[in-house]
Length: 194
Image (cartoon, rainbow, N blue to C red; front, top):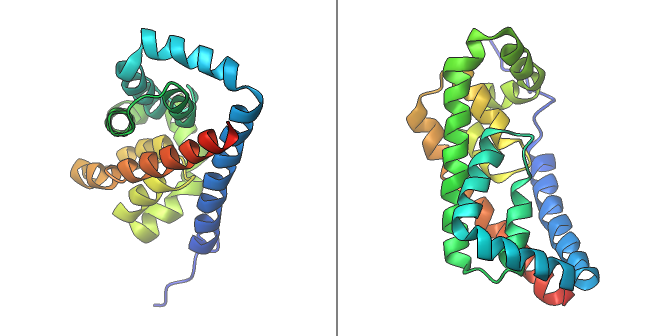
């Protein structure tokens, strides 16, 4: 029995999309820094003063457990324009992201199978994510932690399919890499745009 190559999985395209999204984020932050620097500085100053690192941490928990909340990159922009410490920012956001993904995993494992609407939501994304899970298993979580594959939806899906939590958590540790890369790409955009 031979394995057929799944046409929906194209790692080369996924790598190109990832690099493209990093460049796009750099360009967007450059544009924000160039055209809206003062406005963004004022807003981020309030955010940092009121919420600080806890706001980044909690925002990432919400962002990666509720996929329609706020894109994680918005918090990075606030941290960079608010001149927050890079290491503390990366740590608080990465840990928050992993906790948010873990919440999504447990929702997928325990809640989604009990509710018809929840199952329908996962089925919508399952067709896109299942080929990655079938081909790469644990590696699918790593890919979603690093690339534009939606991390929270992958967490819901692997939870629903009962991937062992320790494997999910191990793959989720790559969120540290993603947050770091995007942080420094945005930082370059911010300093060159101003």
